Length: 476
Image 1 (cartoon, rainbow, N blue to C red):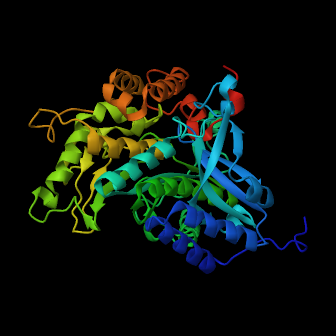
Image 2 (image 1 turned 30 degrees about the vertical axis):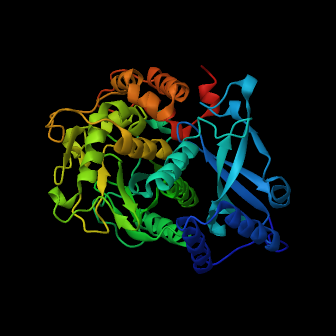
Image 3 (image 1 turned 135 degrees about the vertical axis):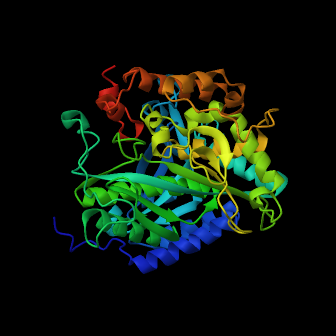
């Protein structure tokens, strides 16, 4: 179809980067919401080449949903956007289905037109109930509340950066077609740090890195990972809600780029048995008055007492929050000690089999790395679990809590039991949300083989929440 009559917005990658970095700075400075809203509404009004605004939100399992609003409609109705919550798994029943979207104008992004389509901008939304209050099933809103309270009450800024691994497989919709062949086809078998310029994996990584840079990610490094066709693209840390938004954008960008290259990206934790799986190492820190309060030049491993207590609380509740950090049947294949699996409930500066690692750092980079996180988990739930537990959880009386020889659950059924029986998860998520989430995970588990065996079963992939198939689920 000819596009010569269209004049929708198409900006260069350099222009996009400048706009996104400026918006990122506004957000990091915590400019008043009304001030940012006024600025964004003026931009949308003045920029005639924008046709639509894509509003993003996530369901209880972390699946990303997107609604495109005509720009002219949005400008008139942005304070009254509604949608049917009963169509979103884990949200509301049909009899109480209406939910609202409140646009978070600080979480505004300009996206490359060649990847996302011309004439569009992206913005995240907060889900509200009929009463206009934050909806309990919206983990983004719950995380945002935690972040704001920590800042207002204690002056804390919660920071996070995630190292997200994924696989690139040949063909479109490889996960959806897995049941036909029972295997995935690699696009590259070079291995760690090795991919020749111009080969499919390197082309994919380079393209994703370019898009991320344009969207203000502030990249650090990218490379092929240990397993064949595996990748990791690292970027700078940010305030916790922005960091979780970035995870959702990272995965969306990867999928968009892979599709345009005729390939598929998979964030299944263990799509191929016998090689390393995908992790989402979650690096966190807390700053106050511009200082990293995890840092202590004289502390053990140069970590402060505050930082070690943060770790002790997470270790104490390791079993409780395991289901939030490892949400799928397939995730428990990754917790295998033969592949640097972080399945030991302990902390270490060097042992990569530990649930928590204390990386070597300085005053700026001192942090805690939670390694037992799968990339298919809800990023808002992950960061809520880590920070609320680290700040407000209890500490075990066991003096050897950091060296204890305990292991995380090796199957989702045990993780569900720990999750359900824990009083801490009730405090974390509330009784209603906790039960809804546990039911979703139980339903996924019950549709998969209880004993997984040594090769990936089709059901693990078919009922994986990130390749959600509405038709398939409705057959049950």
